[in-house]
Image 1 (cartoon, rainbow, N blue to C red):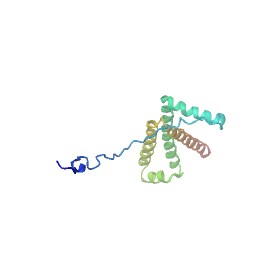
Image 2 (image 1 turned 90 degrees about the horizontal axis):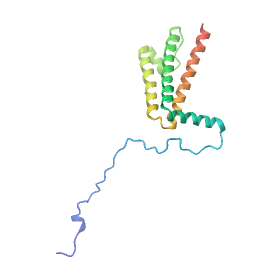
Image 3 (image 1 turned 90 degrees about the vertical axis):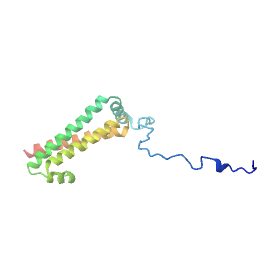
Image 4 (image 1 turned 45 degrees about the vertical axis):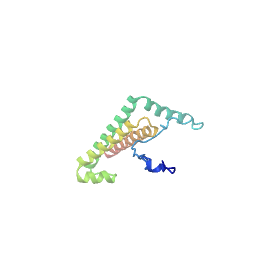
Length: 156
């Protein structure tokens, strides 16, 4: 045997065999609910946190909220069709373009877009920001609903 043995020539692991993998999983460790209690803000912040926690812990109440968002979306579409038939104009430029093409396209887009958002909120319901989006959606559509109601009372 020879005295100068080359270790690298016999090693089968010459190249690095580790492979990098692409992961499409959002690695979120916090859900937004594990924050420390706020010392300021008082009852309003505590009530809002309680509302978000109840939506997180009660899937039935979140389901009702998301169904309400979809119903208000449909009501907005019907009221918009009514207003357009009376000569009003659409304020949203995307919906205006779709209404100019065909009202059916506008309806399909409107229903599918909000339905997709509500499905996304449902899938991410354990996260605080998703629950905040659900409350925001219902608030915006409720404001639009009352805007249509007030507009109809002044129109007639």
